Each structure stands twice: as C-alpha cells, then as structure tokens.
Amino acid sequence: MIEDRLERVFAGAGCRGSVAVLDIDGPGRVALGDDELVVAASTFKIAVALELFCQGAEGGLDLTERVRLSPSRATPGGQGFCVFEDDAEASLRDVARMRVTISDNTAAGVLIRRVSVARIHARLAGLGLDRIRLAGTIRQEFEAMGRDAGFGGWAEMEHAMRAAGSPQEADRIWQRVLSAPSLRPGRVTSATAGHMAALLRLIWRDEAGPAEACAAVRTLLGQQRLTRRIAAGWGDEVRVAAKSGTVPGCVSNDVSRSPCSRDRPNPVRGRPRPIPSSARPPGCVSSICADSTEDVPPAQPTTRLCRSCTAG
Image 1: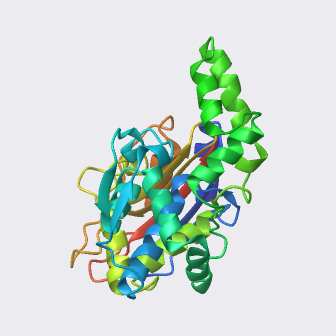
Image 2: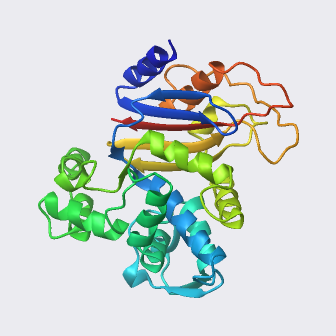
Image 3: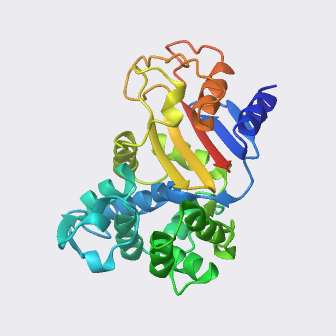
C-alpha cells in the first residue's frame, strides 16, 4: 500500500511524517497521519497571505499602503529585511511577496500585526480549517523559546551560541531550544497536513476568499525561491507552487500544488523524477503520491496537492 511506502521513506530518513494529498478537481486523496497536529514552521505564512489579500479585495486595506521597516524591529531569519542596515519602505503587497518568496520573518511579523491573528483565525474557521492556529508573531515565539531554553530571550540565546567554545557546545544550546515547551505543537504555531492541503485546494478553486485574493496567493506561491525540496520529485518541465517551512533539527515542511498548472487548457502531467531513497522526504513523497494516480485524460485535468511534515 502507498501508506507503507510513505512510512518507509520517513523511516529511511530517520524521522516521522504526515502527508495529505488532494485532487483539486476530483475526489482523489492520499493521507498518512493527516490529522496529527505538528509544528507548522513557515507554512503558516500562506494563511497570513490569504487574509491580507482578502482584506485588500474586500476594501479593508490598501495593498499599496507603504510600510516602514526598521532594523531595530527586525525578526531573526537569516535573509530579507533582518539583514538590512538601514530603514526600508515597501508596499504591503511587496512585503507579502518577501514573506512568501524568501520566507522573510520580519515581513511576516509586520503583516500579522496589520491583519491581526483574530482575523486570520476567523477566516480559517469560516473555511472549516480551525486546526491551523497561530500562536502570535514569529518574534513572540522566538522570545518564548529563548526563555524556555534558560536565557533572557532569543537574542541572548543567539549570543551564547556565537560565543560557544565549540560546535558541540553550540549544538547543546540549540538542543535546549528544540526541547522547549513553547516549541511543542499546540503551543507554537501549528497545523495538520490535512487542513493545510485543504487550504491550498480552496485557494486553487477560488473558494478561500475573493477570486482576486486567491489568485494573488497562487502567484506568490509560484514565485517561492525555495522549491527544491518537494520539487525534487519532478522534472524541470513541471511547475511547482510551494511554501516551505523549517525548524533546523525539528521539522521540515512543504505545502505545494503539483505537478500540473491550472493555467493551461490542457495541463501537461509531469512524470515523477526517479530519486533515491536517500533524497529529502518531501521529494520522495511527491513522487510516490504521483505514482499512485492513474493518468487523467486531458479533458479531465487533475492537479495534485501534497503537504508533508517531517520531524527529525
């Protein structure tokens, strides 16, 4: 059975995982642990993007509104606005693009505060997706993890890691973060594979909100730079729209639309690329799930969604 094959992929990578695969235009479904609550990492940014563009389409905010971002208020993340030395200004729409395409944590914090966690949760609840839950901004979550690890906050923890006398000592500090109660599913921003796949299905069907809002989210997901993981299961001719999320040493997530494009009248069904069992689980999972689907005639195009969560 396909579930057994998926279990072997995760076991071979030394981790546990959950998977949800849905046909956009049909009843097809593959699931493994799809109702298990897991750490969402950056995949939750899809829900923030949806709320932003829905509010824009509904007249609640102006997507061209200018936002000033200051290095003093940046959220750690390794790329994006957090590495800037000077204040920067961008529209809400372009801040959203930074948040999704390179997973900019500072951009995510700005937009969460702008649209509000309560509004995000209300829209998700209205869609029947109440198991996608934000715990707050990323900065708030980082600060809680730093304190749980025995430091004054995230900055103090980062300083301790940089000042560590050896890589082993730095790793021991990071392990304290990974064991923090505030990083457990339900305490940190969390979701299930099933609800994340369902969210993407609604977005692709223009049923998650106004059509123009859904289209804007689809565009951003198609521009994400970090698509090498789940896209590894497909050839170069296949377009994969995705959002990844990672907590090093804890979780590696992918939410994607693959392998064919709804934009084409006669979508080309990409053939899964043969990849070794040692490859990253998301690529293997994507390939296996596609293998499980019989060819669909061009008159009945079916798009696959795959969301996999892996924990080290």
